[in-house]
Structure formats: structure tokens, C-alpha cells
Length: 403
Image 1: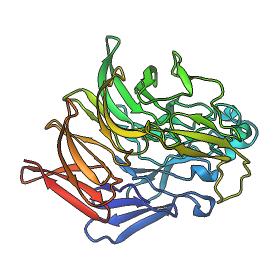
Image 2: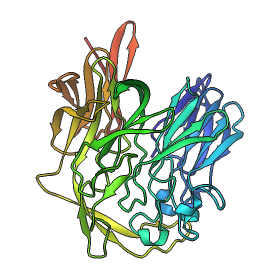
Image 3: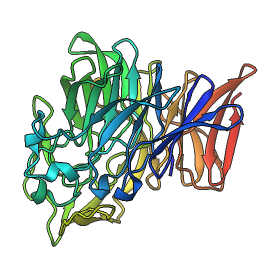
Image 4: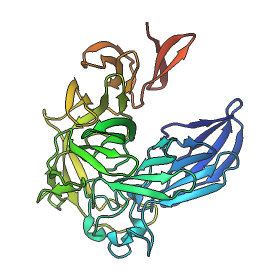
């Protein structure tokens, strides 16, 4: 699986399932260089699209279910030489290492498997991290487990960690925080701020100050039954009897989360945040957690429960309050992201269908059945002054011209 490529100058950059970063000539496809990012036999892989930032190519790593120790790398765009590495789990003697009991930090996961965002004014990269390992047995890794389930703000030039915010301390439900962060400017409590907004897999929507990492607000955007709310600093207030057990504990949302890796979108024209959501619950079971290199390291299992209360939707939220403005209901959850346009459309996909919604009201304006499974984000481009929308469906790429 690969979620995209990066383009810079005359080169195309792609990560591989066996954990290499490869640079190709954009015109000919000839390989210019390749760099080994990690050892694939221990469960590492590169599945996310790299991010081009100035003269560097930033790439994350997957493998959180294999007991890896996560990291984020930056490579020289011309040579493939490593410029810096940020470990997402602090090593022995580093701040935050004591949030892992014993030696559990060495196999703690926290991968960086979805592409982050970049603010050129602050020269900061914002990147989400995945769940701690093992997924469902927290007894072998007691503590908050930094910096799993967090967003990291990293200096693009040096790789220095400027700040972090952890959404789900000591996660035992596999609620990765790898959702794509959206950067916008807005007013919160009467003050104009640079903001980072995100709908997290744990069921809460967050607004942070992206300069400092300060928590500004958070609220549930899907049904969740594991926390009574968020504290003043954004720490969840856990409810009792929600941790996995051998017999199974039912919790909303399911391990797939209120949303997942697929992209949300923000429209400055309507000042709305659009996200594909999932309403579902699961039973979470704890189990044995014996680490072996290259072998799945789950520590239990989860089982999503079927029922009429399970569905998917596209929801529009107020970015500075998290308030739901409208919802377009789907028959099932989707694995496709959304796209908002300056022309007042929100494009999404589900059940093999691509559709366009009115960005202000959520009213469906158009739809087309592609005949193939859609697990990608729609994109838009212009040729000869005419706007097009393209999406991958099954084995096909389908393009539409917008009148």
C-alpha cells in the first residue's frame, strides 16, 4: 500500500513497503537514488506520501503493530543523505522516557505513517503519531507513553522538537493520531491566532495554537463512551470500565475511530471544516503481549459491532467551536477523504460513488457511480481555464470537467 508521492524540481519521491525512499526522474522514471529508511524484516515500512520541504524530503514510518520504535526522517532532496531524525519515543535519559514502564519504550510503536503539514512562516512541520504497542494490553507499558497518539511540531531545518500535544495518553484502543492536521488562522475567545485543527480518531475534535501547542478547545464530534470530556489542558477525563478485558469491553468509537487517515478539508470561504466520519463501536479484548521481531504485537484484539446505529457521514464543523453545522448521511463508513473548492463544493466518495455537496448546506448536487471501490481522496486541477476533478476507483482513474 502507498498513499502518494512527493514532487520537487525534476524528481518524484516515493516510499516503499520494504522501507526505502526512492527518487525518480519525473520525465523518464529513471531512478536517481534510493535510501534505506529502516529494516523491513522487523515490521518497518513506508506507506505514506513523503513531504517536500525546501531542500528536504520528510518521510514517516509504519509498523506500529510490530513493536517498532517510531521516527520521522528528513533527507537531502538531491542526494538522499539523512539530514535529521526525530524519534517519536524518547530514549533512555531523554524527557518523556519515564512515561514508559521498564524497557517498553523500545517496542512502543508510535509510527508516523500518514503525511503531516508544513507552515513556511513558522518553518514548522506538524506530524501525527500512531498508537503505542502493544495495541490493547497497556499493562506491559504503564504510563502516558509519549509521544504516541500525539501531534509533534518540529523545526524543519534542524529536526528539533518544538512542542507536542498528546490526544490519548496511554491509549489502549488503537486510536492513532495520524489524521491530517489542517492549518488555518482564526479567532478564538476574541483573539486572532494561528491554529491547528483536527478531528481525532478517539472521537474528539481539537483546536490548538500551532505556534505554542496550547490546547484551545475540544469536543466530541462522533459518539464516544470512553471519556466524560477534556480537561483545561485537553487531557481526556476517562470513564471507568472502558479498558479492554479478556471477556471484552464495548466502547465507542471502534478501533477504526471517528475518522482515520483520509484527508479532511477546510474552506476559508465558508469557514467550515469538512470530515468523513464513522459512527461505530467495538468490543476490545486484552491478551498476551510477547514481542518477537517482525511478528504482529497486538496484545489482544478488537471486534467492530454491527447494528443500525453504525453509519458513515460527511460532517461540516465550525473550526473554532467544533459545532456540527450539517451532515450528509452515508449508508456505510468510507475510506475516502473530502475536498472543498472555491466554487462552493465539497466532494467525497463512498460505496463506489463520487458525489458533490453544497459546501454551505450539505445538499447533494451531483453523484456518479464509478463501478469500483474508492479509497482515495478526490483532487482538483485546471486545464485551459476549465476545472476538473479526478479520483481513483478500482483500477481506473476517472476525471470530470466542472461546468
